[in-house]
Image (cartoon, rainbow over all chains, first blue to last red):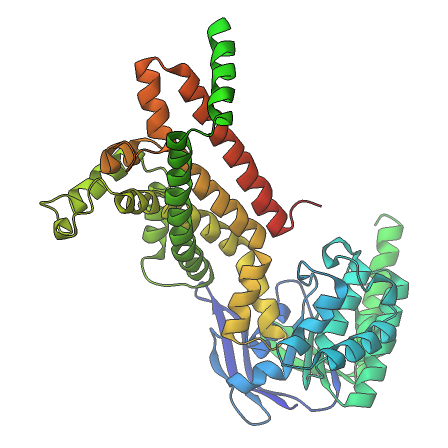
Length: 234
Length: 230
């Protein structure tokens, strides 16, 4: 799904958070969005997801404005996804149930995704009591099971152990290659963005700009230097 | 101490003798409070959920009013309902005064703000997260509302139990609008109040025991239904 931002301006308490003149997220790619805390990454993602509609300008989805049908094609996964107070199976089956799938189809598809995400062992466990990593896997399985055309991930691998992060990253890349879904991934982790994304955008000083490889390498170098400074107490 | 002990023994015999009057009073009490709770739940759950999920003009003022009404004194409710349904009131033609229906109306007025307030408070806290998760997974407005209500079923159970408890234990409003007429509008609380003033402690204790048993049973049943007991 192609996403175009035209003169998108977001204010909060009469203060401009960002003003994006013209920007395009091309279809069938994994896009990364990086930026400082408070730069408006989450706000931008929520606007694209249709969860925040208080802004000026327009966001186009395949050249069309937001419409009711889009609800069925877009999904948004946050850093701390809400788990429905039922079993893992029921959580993953929810999007299929509201789409009127038959019981057999739901069972087959949920079992397939449980296997794909390696979470068969928690199939009947209450989703409320899962660990952060398990929650994130369930949230991703739940978000992908209905095969959306646009997947919006807001720090979806934060608070997750490195092994799970690697597993989820590989799964995401593989899934994107297979299904051609468009993904916008917001992250603080530049390494992750470089590993996973086809292109990267930076949200800074209220505007969105495309980052080239050199810029990202420079950012990474600065990060390494900052870590070194910290290590030596400077 | 002996009086209390004797009171308990007499109360036990009274209940065991299956006295028709006693059991008709218990039946009427449950019927009135249960009906009022059902009516209040329908109104309260709907209004509370809508208030919690939507922004609208004068919302803050309405919320303040609902919270204030949660602490309504039953006697004031009784007085207000009397003014409305008495012969000279706007609903005077229907001759509702001193009928079980008048008691149901009074208890509904008393309970509705309590259920609305509790539901609103929880919906405001968690409703938006639940609604969002349904929306981002493709749920339409109906799916969203259903999910919010399902997720808040424990809160709904608590609100309903609280409302029922408030209804069945209040005496002021039902005394005013019902009149404590024997065999017609006499309920457990008005029966206790009357017998207490007459010095018949055994009857009062018997009804008190029944009231407590009903409260415990209702609580247990509702929490079991809501899945709070594991």
